Image (cartoon, rainbow over all chains, first blue to last red; front, side):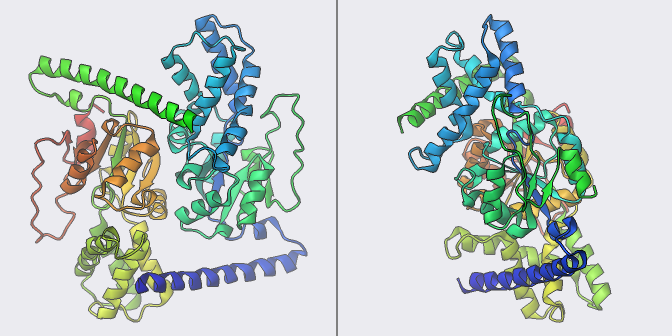
Length: 278
Length: 278
């Protein structure tokens, strides 16, 4: 494959030149300001990739609301907030089983269902009378999660300058259905599923940059979770932090202080867009 | 992985039940009408996947227009229609080298560049004076192809009922940039790149259905090319045919007669939407 090799060499050369040009502009601006200004930090960014659960959509209040509606229809008197928290609590361990290799690649829809089945069997929430169709529909609440109040307006502003993509552990179908349901204006729906790895595995971020045809430094990861941002920065992404203080139950203590090296921090997506002059 | 196996078995069971329900509805409607009506043919379709080059965008007139503009800037007096046709003529053989295994997986951007480099070296079109940056920009004309006049309006109508996705041999970055440039309202950007196979390899269609979380029978492939539709039908897709008589040079003879088993045929995307009652 000599042609392919030539092509890759040439691409590497041009990637290097354009990175070097970006670097020059950045140094100039830095020396003028005495410290890295925001515009220097976002210099060269062409696309933003977004974490979804918690960052773009409010999974907790959405699940509570659907649980309450289901409970009213079926006469189930459960603590739906506790149910939402328990369901979500199973998420990271379930992905951990895939990341460790214990489970082969398994979509989030199926991981959610495994966790839900466990909650049904535990009989804590009175769900054992639900039919298979009802359980399947309940499992799809993750396809119907509602955006935070600032999400659609903020994304619409950011989309004027940047290519916007999801970069979620949610599977593509879930993200596509969610976007259609909630009116999320993505340019592309990217997912851990396309890499066959779950975040924060580095393969997920590198696959996203590759699919977008960009160097990692031309992509900014936007998330409410610092671990996601740190993992993306390790492979060269820029970082945008939008903490969501009410994502988890009120009694969950979390340190929401931004890392000093996050490139942009916003209190919500509108504030985030404003910081970028949009 | 016993849980995963259980999960897959349950999914297969439910896929089978819903297919059987769809089949009953279809038989009912068929017997009432004496022949498969259009609504029976599209029963159960949830998503449409679109071929892009030629079906959604008019590559030939776009390349001619950009060639003419480049020629005027650089003083190159070339036959840009011939140039467009020669560039496109290299496309299928280049993909053939990937499909046969002669070349490893290579994105369309890189295949387009290999073909373009051949045209430059052939010196037929007077392109040898172009700089690397100019050639790179010319190669990206495929990211800037213009839609047919009916494309955006037709897709906007279809999107009210269906999930709309690309299913192109174009790489994801190309398709994302094209959509942003031309305002194409996709719900998802799917590509042969995600399967690591080029159409008409069956893996491309099966991967698209899997990513959309649908059975093949719930997806309709829409294309101006009968081979693409026939290949998709072989794995169970429904088919929508929208011939584009002016896609190729006027002297290229093509049989545009629809196959009798194509499910929907439209003269353009507006007519196609109208046939579906949208």
